[in-house]
Image 1: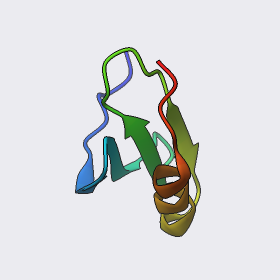
Image 2: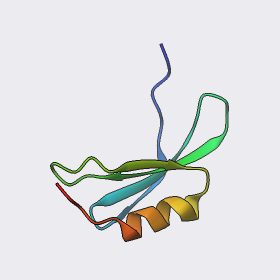
Image 3: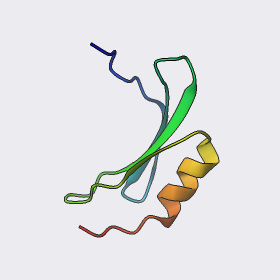
Image 4: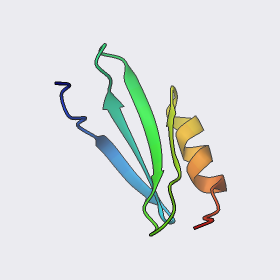
Length: 62
C-alpha cells in the first residue's frame, strides 16, 4: 500500500490550490487542483512555475 502524499508549500490562486510533494522515488513534484464543486481539473508538473501557471490560466467548466 503506497504512502499518502504529504503536501507542503500550499498556496491558493482563485479556486485552485498549488502544492508540492515528494513522490515515491524522492523527487519533488508539484500539483495544481481546482476545489470548485463539479470541476475535476488536476495536473502534476515537474516544476513549481508550471503548476502556478496552470492555476492562473485555469477556467472552471463544471
